Length: 211
Image (tube, rainbow, N blue to C red):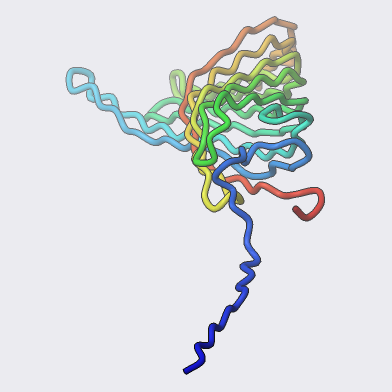
């Protein structure tokens, strides 16, 4: 009795990314990161209460010139507000500049990264106090050079989306003009401002051409 054998070729149209870094040359990395904080404080001895709110938003895009090295542009805005019964302090910072990010590991699941961004910063600070029934407002405004750095980890989902957690250190050297509402006098001052914060966000990995 003759025996027959059937063979079927099965072609699977898929790409195995397990042996390649998601941060590969030619891809674009675009997305949004940010951080937010809020708190309230009370001094029981002086019965002084204060409320603080703070947030930071960063939008950026860049291209991998070589594997794991991304060069692009970023812009971010910070705003903080502190209020108590007699005073209020509000500050705003806008920053824009080039950004370089290096991912240390070629692993397809994610990598520790380090980024640096020098650029130009605009700053405005308003301080209002109630002194003997008179409201006094001081305004500082101007711009200068800033330097932003981030150390963090990027977790990659399906070779397309990254979830990032980072520790940020920002420092600004600013030339400001000080004004007040009680007279017309102004003066120029130089400030150095810095802050440390945590951030989180999502970014998208895009191919410049199909694999």
